[in-house]
Image (cartoon, rainbow, N blue to C red; front, side, top):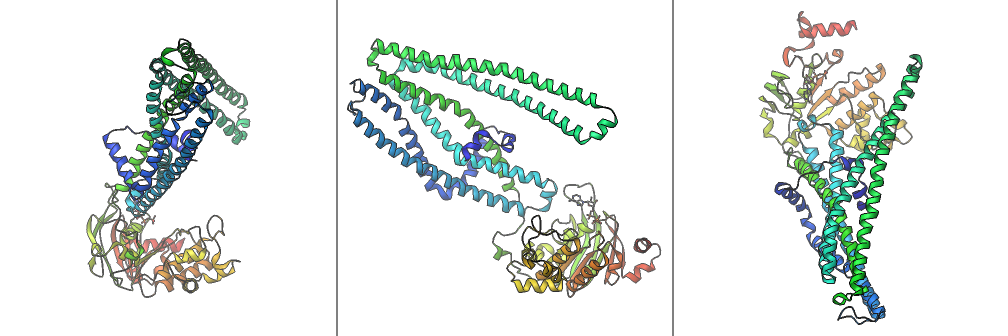
Length: 609
Ligand SMILES: Nc1ncnc2c1ncn2[C@@H]1O[C@H](COP(=O)(O)OP(=O)(O)OP(=O)(O)O)[C@@H](O)[C@H]1O
């Protein structure tokens, strides 16, 4: 399977850049090879069997020669009588040994490669999900994902096939040349003078022709785009009477395709002629010269020896031909390992892969303070998002943050969740600076109900239980009831086992929010962050969501990022944020008294709307 991919190369692999092989890159490969260490016994076993199977493979041309000589009554090797039956028996025994070692070398190599690759994948994935948010804000997730999967499958191909194949071909090449010399020094020199030159030319030619046919394919794709565009915009083409223009455009493109294809065909023809003339010519020349040596009885040269020679020559030509491809694959794998190692070398957050170690060690009652917090996103140092922000929230209070879009409200939520850290000032929980708590302690005791609730592809039950892994069905149903979600969930034919996401039902915005509320309720956090949805729900869903939120906010500190000011009148404290600075703080009544204040202005705007 991997072999197939190795040579055909899927699109992603084709794009993978090759890396130069130097000391540094080999050290990097070495680091990645350390993943093989736990399976080293099998790997070494596989290597030994690989050498054995390659060497036994080299014995066969010898048998062929011995058989042909034996048929003519000549003994080819001192240790083997000129007897067809005996030679056949020995050959079958060697075949049996080869089949045996081949089985183990293949299965062992694949086992070692798959297991170590799973370890690399596991480590890379865990590293990725524990990398700080800043890493992701600088990269496009889709690109990252496809790059890593292409890199990892390149490494997989190399570990499962390329390395073994390269070793095998090198053994065949070196062993083959030595054995060729044993058979006939003269013929070997004749061959070695011509063969490398021929193979190098064939490879060069092949690459050139591939490039030409790629150009023709690209041109053809261009002309298909013209068809697609004109058909999609057919109304425009007709309305502007541009049929002739489009036809001419298409025609020009097609002519380019044909020209490129014709140019390619000439080189293809030349290539074919070259192969026929030179490669077959060489073989013919060798056989001719070999037959001549037989005819003059040169140094006991027999037809058996000639046969042996020809088969070895075929072996080493194939080995020489495959090495450049294998080398290119190793180069690509080096490039891939460098990129994977780059991710592995990034500094992750302090989250353990062992769920037990992430359990809460230090409880937080729910007091939060921002003390003179200054913050800019690491990716955009020139824009100060929060400027000297200070406020206190006592345990159990409801604090609303309001302000125009882009004023920094969600950024404050990200700082509470420790997604980022302030450059100046600090954030305290229960009076102690955030860095005195384990990162997991803070995140375990803060829950967020975001604007856009992301549900995973599983069932509703699993989606709610995500808030507290390991919770049982009763706990989930209890939370859903409190979140006003039980009724709509029970109305689905499959109830809590209904699959959400692509294959399941589509949930409305209000229903998704209530699932997120149930999730947060199950978590039972000391601090709750509500990023209020901007999209307006209809009044019935809004009532249901609002009721659920009231239940959720009870007895915990709630930070409400509010867009609709009507929902936060009861808040203990309203913080008005404008361009990263707190401009007003107080209760609804207090803020409404400030006639020139932003809060009163925004409230009035919303009332009028
Ligand atoms: N990951 C990020 N990297 C760089 N800049 C960011 C990032 N996220 C937000 N910003 C910038 O920080 C500023 C504050 O954004 P923030 O999302 O906190 O505003 P907001 O008050 O929550 O806005 P809204 O009400 O529209 O949600 C904006 O100028 C935004 O462009």
